[in-house]
Image (cartoon, rainbow, N blue to C red; front, side, top):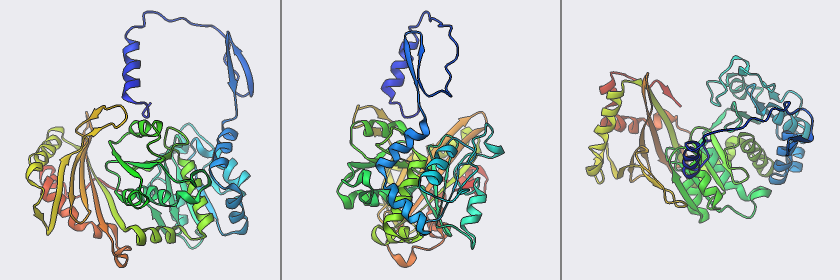
Length: 413
């Protein structure tokens, strides 16, 4: 129940401590393959087709007719990898049966208990079949992936990968083109480690942008209070106020609607976005299975520097702020502390350090690197090269390589 606010989960837990008995009603299993009403004692149970129900909602949010015409005309070709997970039947019904994509546009579309032996995580490492296609001479216009439970997504164009942070920013900047959002957006929110690309969109459109701790429940409060319309996180999650959760297939349809309206490639849409708002080069470096004492020592070392870093010049960049992120929920007033160390620079760049996974196999230190580049001439630079100076600064401040004895991160995304 990740999206559930703390006040609910705390109340559930408190109530669970008071239960002294429970009753069992011995009845046959509900036939979930039979649509309609069924009785369970005094309770009426309704079995409905979730694929048709979801399709009806999506058809109200997006211009299905326009997308259908673009697919029929051949201006949009697509491939969607369902990863043998839950979105397979939804994607086949919507993309192929309803919108007219050619049969087979949805690959790995049959849900399997073991996900076909794959890892149902939407990133380039786990979706090689799709990635290789999108970077080949036979690439379709659009490629997308959704994960095991259908709540996350990855967006690709021909020879082009869209980062989750950029995807959220592009969606926010183009929301007015989409029927369900044509009256504008109330506000946006992103998790703290997610890049600040959407912040610039919010400023230009005059709406509020909330920076929250990692975890969808923080977005939930803002959605319930109508403070935001769109939200997202750097780990491939994007959502809106149509449902109180991230939604992978919704994000895919949002992109298809943008493509149908703008009649541009994915790469051109993102490049136009960068020209208007600037490019936030972004990467996450994970150092996994670090000894817990060493990991805590790195964080304590960083904490000891926070008070005197602002105003200092490090590798010719002036530090504008340095803090340990805490969040006071604007809806219920609850406070969440120790959510990561942020170090921001006057040029708009920043470094974030977060510790997670402090289990029996050690801890994972995540280092988030973000370099803002306003000049379009530099927008196509290699990401790791663009971030090279920040990577050096991160080591100067944290001493992670020195303290762990490692030369490189375990994973770079």
